Image (cartoon, rainbow, N blue to C red; front, side, top):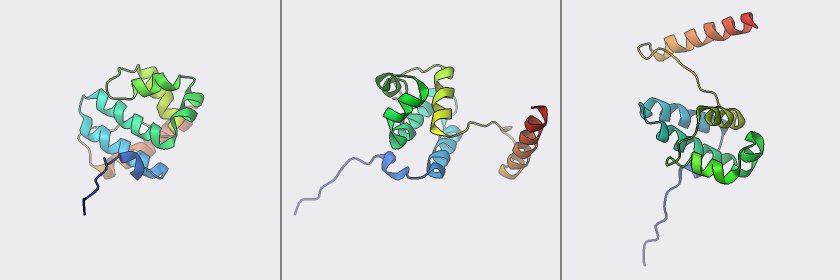
Length: 118
């Protein structure tokens, strides 16, 4: 009996919004200065959510999104921001030298400050 193998696709594992957010977070931790890697991860998330709907939500053509988020494209930061918003995930910043607990506390403080500023 022959063993049947198929190519593994991360999209099959991205079932919930939390899965997608954690995947993006891990990618951003690992990427260093590799923007193409992050774009590719956003492309994986986009495929999991549905590229056609993402194209509608962003106003960017589906083919253009596939190219930009392939890891081979070079999307503008404006495109990345549109995609992130449409996917329902957030990019956030934290000092690179703080612990995860300190980052959560700082994020809460920053969110409160932003709310107060509005």
